[in-house]
Length: 411
Ligand SMILES: *Cc1c(COP(=O)(O)O)cnc(C)c1O
Image (cartoon, rainbow, N blue to C red; front, side, top):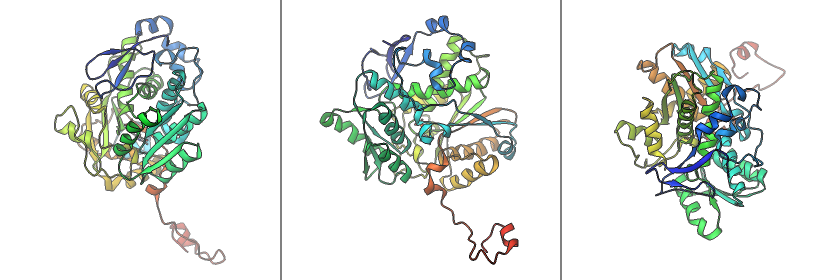
C-alpha cells in the first residue's frame, strides 16, 4: 500500500474508491488520487527536496507508488525553465519563460504520465497494456512498457506523424493504424478489454497519468522558488497536464509550501481546427460537445472529445483563466518564431501557445510585467511533416556565388 495515498475520489460525484487495486473510471468519468497531506507535511519539508535526485521521483511523498516499489524510469530529468527575453520582447513581455519538456525521454512530456502509469500497472501485477493515441502517448507507453518488460498495444489514427508510428514499432509495441480519429482508437481499446484482457491506459481512464503530469507543476513551483507565475499557457488536448498542474498547486498550497496563495491564471490553448474546450468555455458550458472534423498539424491536441472536459474547464475557471483557440494556418509561423528567437525546438502544439500569447497581450489580458510560462510539451524534431521546407541548393560546388550564399539563396 502506498504510504500517503488515502483513497481515490470520483471527479464527478466525490464517491470514494480503494487505491489498493487497479481502477478505471467511475460513472464513465475520471478519478482523483487523494493523499494525507498533513502526514506528508510532517515527514518532509520543501527544503529537503533540494538534495534529492533531479528527476520527477524527487516528489515521491506526493506520488502514488509505495516506497518499496522499483519505479519504471528512463531518466526523467527535471526540465529546464528557459528564460526567453527575445521572444518576450516580441510581445513586450519582460518575464517570459518556456518550460522545455522536450528534454524528457521519448521527446515529450507524455513520459511523465506514462512513467507513473506503467510503474503503478506493474505494481498491480498487470502484464498487458493498451492505449489509443494521437502520437506521443503511444511512443511513451511503448518505451516504458519495453523498459518494464510488459506487453503494449498502441492504436493511432492512420495520419499520425510518421515518427510516432515508427517509435512505437521500434520499441516493440504492437502498433496499429486506424482509419478515423483518436476517439475511434479509444473504442477499439475499450472493446478489446473483453477479448484480450488488457488494461486501458488512455488519458484519464486510469488515475495515475495525472499524478505523473502533476510533477510539471511541482517542478515549476520549486524552480520559481515557490512563487507561482501569473499566467501559464498550456496546449490542451485531453487536458491531463493542465488538470495535473492545477491539482499540484492545490496540494502545495495545502502543504503550506507556497510563498503566497497566488495561483496562476491557466490558459488552455487549442487550434481552431480542433477546439472543443475553447468552444465550451466561450459558451459557458461545463461539458464540451465533441468537435466535428478535427484537423490540426498539432496532433497532440487533436482530441475532439475529452473524458475530463469538466475538469479542464473547472480548473480554467477557478483560476480566472481562459480557453482560447488560435488560427491553425499560422502554427508553422509561430513554430519558426519560437525556434528563431530562442533556438528552442518547439512543437506545433506549443506554437499554438505563442499564438495565444500574441492575442492575449494584444487584448491586454496579459500585462507587460506579468510572469508568464509556456510549456513546450514536445520536440519539434518529432514533427517532420509540420517542418517541411525547401532548402536552397548549391548546384556546382566549383562555381559558388557568394553574394547569393550571404542572402541564403540557391547558387
Ligand atoms: C498530448 C500532447 C498535448 C496535450 O496534452 P494533454 O495534457 O493531454 O492536454 C500537448 N502537446 C503534445 C506535444 C502532446 O503530445
